[in-house]
Image (cartoon, rainbow, N blue to C red):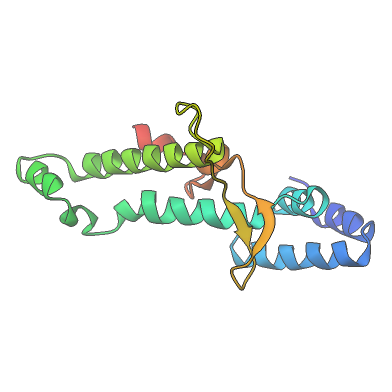
Length: 167
């Protein structure tokens, strides 16, 4: 694998001062999040004005909470049906895989609906929605987070893009 530092520095040197500052800030923030190679995300945010940091934080939060939250000890204890299945001899690992897969499907479907921006099955209704990035004060930046459902699998911390959900 090649060292990304020369490519980073070369690209950084090609930027004007505001974009350079934005890129350096993004690199520090992605680094704090544990992203080891954020160059493509930073380039996309700086050059294409796409809210990649917000997308990353939202998708990672959903994966960690809604999907991987079920791997925590005692997580099945809050589900009476799971307790009955365990008492009947079900394998705890299989139940965790099941609830994680169901959670993934719920997250994916929700993100897909948010990305659609409206319900195409309701003709004549002029209502829709969008997910927007906000700044540190909670004010909208005006940048929409779109295509979220397309990237949820990339947030799998195992690096297997969710393959263990369906085993």
